[in-house]
Length: 269
Image 1 (cartoon, rainbow, N blue to C red):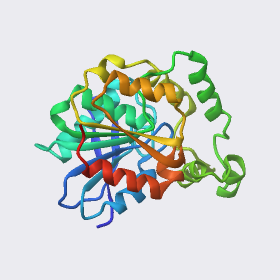
Image 2: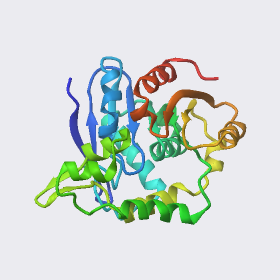
Image 3: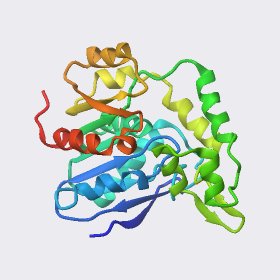
């Protein structure tokens, strides 16, 4: 079955867009990282066809969801996931998996509503935040340095490069009359990541849901940061993904799918 676009309207007027792969298996929700979209996870969804009903969500401010929502708090993101579950998988406890910011959203959803989550899978996500305010500014400035509109796709390739992450950004560009524009705004991305950078150790240490934390070999976290995450919640199952970087679901797809398969089926202490 081909993934179908669906939308959910939130109480604050925000529209959440998602891909629904359909099927009869358990429901798995996939959440992308900052400045990404659900499209990044379509290869992952395809690999699970027949085993899981995959819902790949465009988080608020991203993809085809509302571009400039008023509420960019972490709670708003988590409540969007709750709304997806309650509308599209009522009465179920689902698996929720995410990468980077999406892993952070998934974790906070599981912390707030453990009754709705059967298992949490975090790829390159961390509850420790970043207390250096200049980092969020740097990220905002990076996205603000892009042209507001690329005249054509080739120009976008020249500007953004040929990495797997750049390819994902380019594939997600929105065609408009003037050319091709990103499906997100730089100032929104900065505000989103400012909230992500607030440490959430209390929620992490009190988390009741079975959890797998996956770190890529060339990811963004230090050994000390990984160790602290497990030390603060020893019941977490840590998995190290060989190869790949922070966006391992893109640049190490084969390894990611293998690790994900084990995370979905293996027991968690």
